[in-house]
Length: 234
Image (cartoon, rainbow, N blue to C red; front, top):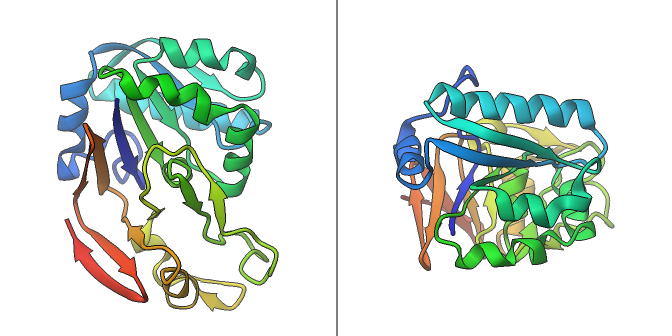
């Protein structure tokens, strides 16, 4: 299995795959031109939104010369066939979205167990996008992202995840670095203190982590945030 942890892998116009840091080249090494794809949602009941994002993602691959003989969007309309869909897919994409919502859905359908056979399949490729990447960790860092979450003392920032990696990723760095939530600065007041509990890999769009054969390699600009200090890596 090859796992790509991404923030976002589309180009600025969201019409193709960002060639930065060699992402497209690495995909072409590992994916057949004719393939079966599976896009797993972040919210099982927002069907229209999931269909829109799924179709947009598939179009990005098609514009780069990949051809889907089958591309399936998975949510609560068809997740009773999850094991079959996962087994039949060459490429599995874990959607972006709201981390706790997606995490809850993944646990409800037993996705961690369903993905277990993929670990020993060298032909299987899994790509996480934003929340999908964050939920790949064994212990997920769910940074507050919606109004009220940062101020809620009961908001759970650490959740059980898929266990595909131990890396905690904070995506979209360039977009969030100057933002505030509930009167708190996303980085200085939330992420920095949280980094004393677990280190966080801070990724901008276009950068990614390539996980394969026991190796985890950061490609493109990234920073390791640990004990309140942010250090460039990659």
